Image 1 (cartoon, one colour):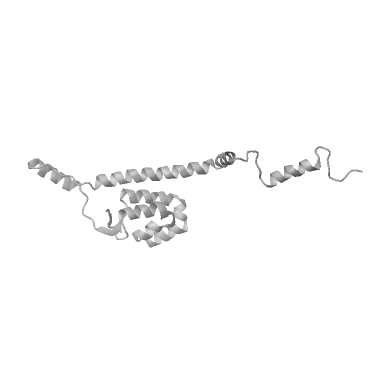
Image 2: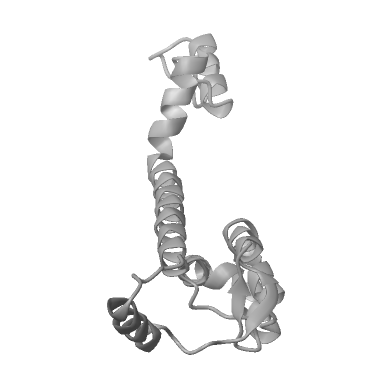
Length: 168
């Protein structure tokens, strides 16, 4: 008489080893390089998204700081009659004078990049209600976080009074 549920295909010991390997998730390549390769290939989309986010953040910071530096650079007009004409043109092109905030531009950028997902940058600028919304949605599901970084870098997001942030 044979035992109920057994087959003659493989010995019982071989099947136990196979099930043990499957249950403990043991892979054929147990080296560090093999595990790393399997991990990276499994999560390659996440790694791509993280590197892409880092690239977008770095590029927007560089472009924004270049734009900010170019915008706030002092232009000295030539002297004489040409200087008066150029000065008049520059005066007409300059935006009207705006109040300056007591909040710092570099601090706002750093807070936006590192803690913007939790609305800390909005709390710093004085936007309490939108900061709470940003905190509740974890940076507006990542979209609001990136938009705020770009807005602060370009200098288009003032503080809660509408005053321009102060550069060092």
